[in-house]
Image (cartoon, rainbow, N blue to C red; front, side, top):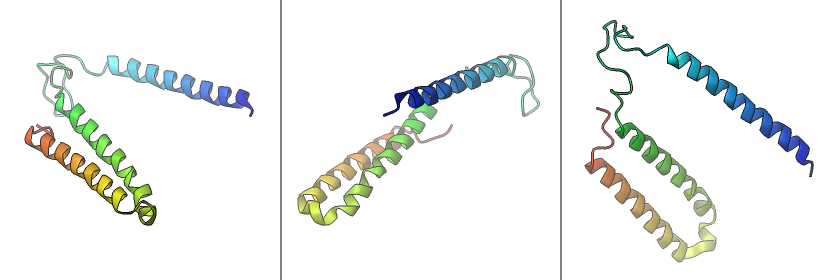
Length: 114
């Protein structure tokens, strides 16, 4: 294998990520300041960090977990004849755990955007 090509490609993507991150950080520093008018035209009394709702992180994590877990259903669907009833019961248990997690997050109101 030619590992030199992989090192060059990896280095390029790491360097590109750092450059884009530094540009974004530089632009962000001057955007949100206390007392300036934003999109709605009114001056803000708080910075954007004080308005941040940590439930949005839980909402994003839940979305990521549920969407990634659905990827596990595709191989199961294609090999259903091979795995038989035992595999079917295991997948039902897996879906039950996902349903319990979704119900728990719904009751804790992490799916609300307020």
